[in-house]
Image (cartoon, rainbow, N blue to C red; front, side, top):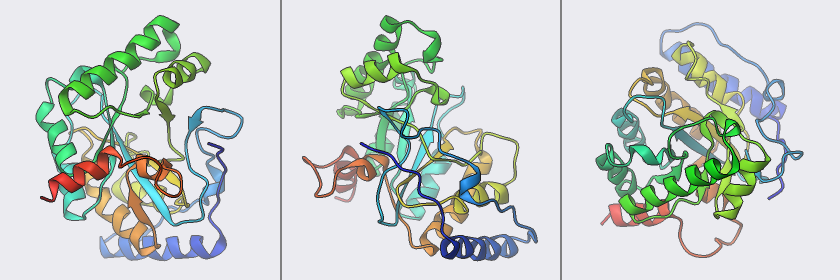
Length: 266
C-alpha cells in the first residue's frame, strides 16, 4: 500500500484550534499548545516500503491504537472510556502476556476491539538476528490465536523499532507492520491538555494515532474523552486500524474487530 503525507489545511487547522480552546477552557485551562501537523513528519514515509503509518484517503476516518508491554498491567479504565464513547480501537499485545491477562483479551474481543501483535517479549527487534525476529513474530501470533481464536494480521514492533529483516519476516508470516503517523506523546511527562492538543492539531484523514495502554497511563485515560470528542467535532469517524487499512469495497470477510463487535452486541 502506498503511503502519503496529508497535512492539515487552514480550514481544518482553525477548526482544531477552536475545538481545543473549547476543551481547554471548559477544563479550566486557559492556554493552548499548537503546532501545525507539518512540523512533525510521520514515522514511516514512502521511502520505507512494507511499513504502514497512515492510509491514503480523503475520507475523514482515523484509527486509535494502544500499545501494551511497558511492564504494567493493561488498563481496564481505557476500555471503560472507549465503551462509554462507543469507540472501537486496536490494541497491540505481546504474546507473553496472554496467559496473565486472558480476561483482558476476552474483554477486548467481546467489546469489538481489534487484537494485534506487539511481538512476543517486547524486545528491540533490530538487535535480534533473523531467526529471533521470526520466532518473536510467530510465537506471538500462536499465543494470541490460541487465547482468542483470532489470528492477528497487524504487527507493531516494540517502540516502532524495525529494519528490513523485521519487515521481511513479518510479511513472510502474513503480518502488516503498522506504526503511526501521530504519536500522542502520552508516554512523556506532559499534561492532559498537551496530549489532546498533540492529537487534534495533527489529525488528518487516514491517520493512525498511538497511545500507551497500561495502567500507568493515567493521563491517557484523562485525555481520551477530549481526544474522542474533539475528533468527532472535526468530523472524523474513529475505527480500528484493520478497518482503516482494508481496501475500498471491504475486501474479503469481516475484520476481527467487526466480528467481535457483532458477537458482543448479542
